[in-house]
Image (cartoon, rainbow, N blue to C red):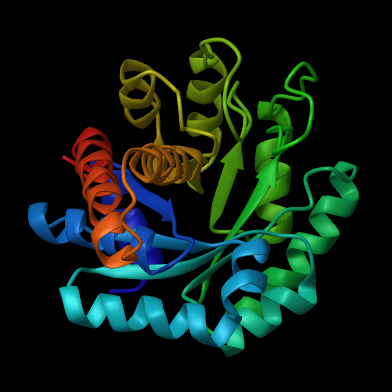
Length: 272
């Protein structure tokens, strides 16, 4: 099943697909073991920096091999691409879905850039996600606000033909300094305006009850990245400091198991 079809199925069922960033074999293994154990689909996400780290062909081959090995319904998605060229490379490499993030440009420019990507992706039958509003990225100020304006949503979706839309309703990428409070009234209005698949970025650290409510209000794709990195790295640091073991095949598995536990919890939260 194509990702667009699965997103529609989950949207109609008031559930969300979990979209998980992976950074290496170990994080991918933890994700796929979780999805396999509870038999739920999952989206595997790559970013520009992860592609630079692993290499595009290596990363895609790793993901495709894991999908086949674990027999989990999965798709590969390019997250937060900032260039047409990178998106084209990823589509040629066989990715199922791409995100063009031109949200920091004025609305008209965002529409122009996104429309061009949608036209390209149509040649590959790929899902296209865009962002409208300000969701602070790593290193950017979380004090700045720029929530998605419901009045812009219909114009943007119709003008671009985009399938999925990341909305700014109070989340941010990275770690939160204080507990976020999502704007559910804004989300409700947006979901009434458009049939586009609504996406929640920056879900790491958002309380479970708010994630559940976001799904109830129309979100059908929930992204998780920071919690995966934190879970892996903090536990690797802890383990390394507690042992003189140098065999990474013995050091990594406990951290992989913790990623598996995290993803099982998140999958159950949004997809069941």
